[in-house]
Length: 468
Image (cartoon, rainbow, N blue to C red):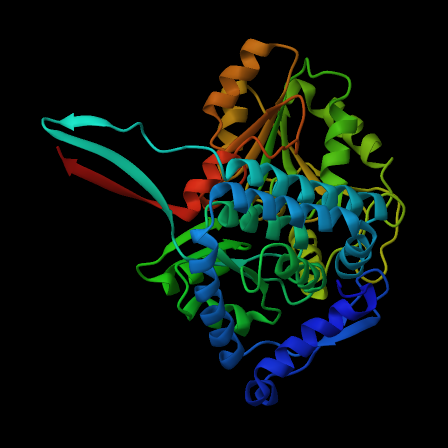
């Protein structure tokens, strides 16, 4: 029986308390807050060394059982987990909303995507990705085995709590690993429910959740795990890479997405960019952030984008920022900006709510340009030529997502080839599916999420050569 909506937060607390009583005495109790209201919605005792060690040990034992299953059996069990997610769609929606403040339709759509991801990787578990066997040396037959790494620590962020757990967990499971998910301290709810359903569908300890704070995450990274998959800030990612030592890491460290808008951009450009910018209150690593156009097209771009953002109202069309630290960061960058024009859209601005905003007439080294704001905000810059606009697009260290908007397909394809980004779009933005890979470059990290390519994030090759 899955835990009820009301008991999911309690389950996170109880598991920490029951597994490590001595540890819990030293760990401060966390108050979980609903970002929509600012009211406390539950408490959590963060996992400490005893529980972390026990969880990883149990995952290690589960990994041996899980990898021994045939791909067909892993497929069947991952499909069963997807069934449970769909069956409990309402429970997951309520939990995601409580932790993130997302509108109901947005949260529901993301949970359906989570189920789809587990179904996609259920099938991928049975695909062959090794090089063909053959006689590469005289008198010898050789082939390659792709083997799971063992236990994967998946440290996931608060902006997409369940979806990021699936982005990391589904391919790792399909590849034959056990997974320990460390959710963000503000959003443990849906990951805890997912772990309960995983125990039912996959087997005990194959996918577990380890709720807690940053110290919990550090303890997990230091534990006997074989690979660390982290999605979050560049600072935290660098810290994890340093702590990982010889172990493998997969890092997605955010973006600061450039948007190249040419004068012949299609009519839907403005509404599509406004929708992508305000989706999840702009708290998406690949969200559009820096609109760059030609000088001749600058005023038109500012006017059209400001009008389009005005159609998206905070509190009606999108949710709040997730936590006080993120709100303070947003406000600090905005206050430090030297923008000549700051054009807010309508909407709530109390508590953690922030209306959409457009900044124009700002220097190229403005804080709102060089830092990832991670909120419902667009900056607009201009350049005299397309090449100069491209140079502005590639001028920041992050290189995750980017888009080009033009009616000229040849120009669009040329620019996407020259943009330094792991994922690019033409006349759309933030459009993703399980079949296509997503990953960053430079300060945005390294590694691959989504698609069958992600299976190799969580596997290692073994060459076998037999003398005939």
